Image (tube, rainbow, N blue to C red; front, side):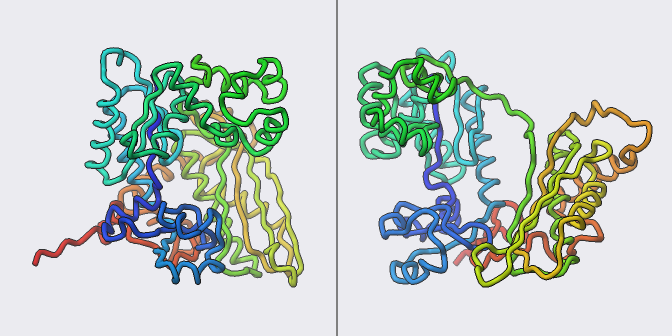
Length: 420
């Protein structure tokens, strides 16, 4: 059996952990630069706030309905997610962290365990340990556990937020209830194609011919069909190193000077190199891009990217920042107001299997230096040590006017309780 653990309205729930007076109140969380809504509480959905709503357009509605607005506090969300995943690991050795607020548990050897009671125990343990409410779906396959979780979340009173599909009767009933567009892995284009041939729900999908499924939805779609039939076909994924790493940001204002954009690109390259070192890899190529604000039709537009093939594999912040700057010089043009830039590193190789070149190699002294910098930044706060070409006063130049405290990751922002 598989269990899918899904945190309810995760970002909004994280904000409520340290602000209990917000329970039952509408909450929205905004994207980078406070641009649009990326998370909503159920109460915010009820007052008419759609996903992706532009913050400046919906500000009158926020005021009218008393919606509490927060800038995305990823430091807080990430830390609470790690705490939840650590608790879940106590209940089974096999866990696949699917996203920041979802995880699959493989429940092998639980034949004589009452899974309903076990699920309730997990829910109570996570809530007591973190204050985050979760929903649980349990079923013989991963795809069916997704379906079961959706039912648990949709009908929390009837299921006590934990639903189990443990019979063919329950499976068929659930699949007939679930619309085809809500099936895990079925995107909009596949949804349109399936509806045209009369597939309107998940059960209809299981009645389709295997050859048709494989030809139109690929082998992945066929595995999904088998999983929905109760035949385990989608296995637990092992954590794999990323194949590319990107750091991209919109600027808080339009930038025109090369030096300003160079500083941003340097910071992006340093961020990528830190992530690269965490997975003990090196990159052999990188892409740098810049573009103007396409929404400003009154301004001249320009967009360009360049792929730089590195002369040697490296994960050094110093070297990657230099290569990123060299690439930026080739694509930057005067006379434009730039709104966004980014660095994407790719073509990875293991750090311990470096192939040396006869002519040019990474500076071997950087390895020890990067190790010390990473240790200091981890122990004393992100980017305490920076390159001289970075802005020493701030990390990301993002608009975050409604950012809550980082209660669990910054000692100076820890929750203060006053005894009366």
